[in-house]
Image 1 (cartoon, rainbow, N blue to C red):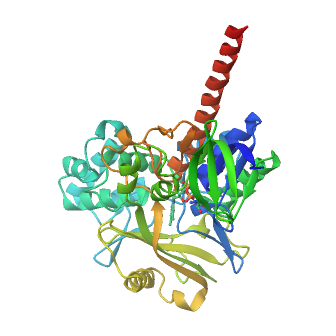
Image 2: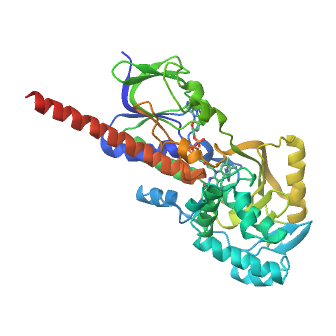
Image 3: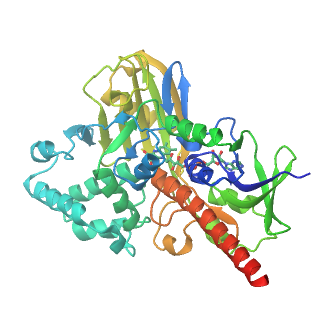
Length: 439
Ligand SMILES: Cc1cc2nc3c(=O)[nH]c(=O)nc-3n(C[C@H](O)[C@H](O)[C@H](O)COP(=O)(O)OP(=O)(O)OC[C@H]3O[C@@H](n4cnc5c(N)ncnc54)[C@H](O)[C@@H]3O)c2cc1C
């Protein structure tokens, strides 16, 4: 007998687990399949030498929709917000970052004219409605609101920090400014890392009876009889599902979706490019310079932050867990060894002598931060988690028309679950009515 589930979720990252946590309230049989040995996807945290390492720097928007959804699901989000201080590097010179009220007036980075312009831009950001800028690239919008090169560079830096996007000429102003506005509401670094969210979501779902199959790859999704789907797995098994929520990336979805199914979004999916970066994740026994906790370069796309200064990531209070990150431009392909050197040199300036204190370090040269670089017109092509194939839903950080990153993964996970519930209700209501009319 082929085993059958009401809902099969492909992918055990934030999107998959959030969808699962809404569906477990509805008494359906649910199976979650994850190809990795451990669950969590890009929200996983690895413990190495007793230090918690997120997969690169991870910060949750405090006032975003994702946080509200996690709270609705009763997920505890313990941690703290990094201070709005830190430095910006320009031509190897350090300046106070003009992101807080005090440094806004004191920083030597800006002359009087630039300072006034920057204040005007910050005020504009507070009242702007990003949805109205759907037809502009971020670069076009920035050029409309700035006169000086310095303020232009500052806006690109802020855009990178909030969205991880380093292609202002390609990305939509709406998407980047939505991220900037969310980031202006503050972010949270989580105690124990992002895995704590995954663990809570996993435990709730499995305690309610959801099955999780790890280390199992969904190779193919094909149509089956009675409006069901057959999933072919890497272990040779074939299983059936009435509804399938797919949280893989767009290219993987194209690959596993049987060509027997008519899927008009295929071409768009194949054109989606990801947001990528390089991350150097490091644990030190101590920081050589205790005061240097956050820095960015305003010309080069470089980031540095000591996450353990605000979140508990180690049992040893003096140990420091920090991330040095390079935002990649989608058209640029750099050699990993060169990027590593660049990140280490950036850290040399900020924490001279850091190499003496290393407990552990990990370098990932080309990691996918978000599955979709948000471009103008994307929102017309992404159908709010629904596909034209009845019973098939998509979720993930690329699948929300209005957001990216965890914000998109979590909101689309909730939305996909709601669509399953709604469509099933419609189906059952229809059945009930036809039975009534037959009496
Ligand atoms: C370096 C870095 C920094 C980041 N920083 C932030 C940040 O500060 N703020 C923020 O909001 N977001 C950040 N993100 C993004 C955030 O981590 C992701 O957007 C989010 O975790 C994506 O969740 P997801 O469920 O959509 O995808 P994933 O986490 O990728 O989950 C999808 C899962 O599906 C599984 N899968 C794929 N194909 C198959 C298959 N065929 N069969 C079975 N399983 C399959 C994968 O193994 C994976 O576990 C960052 C990401 C990175 C890499």
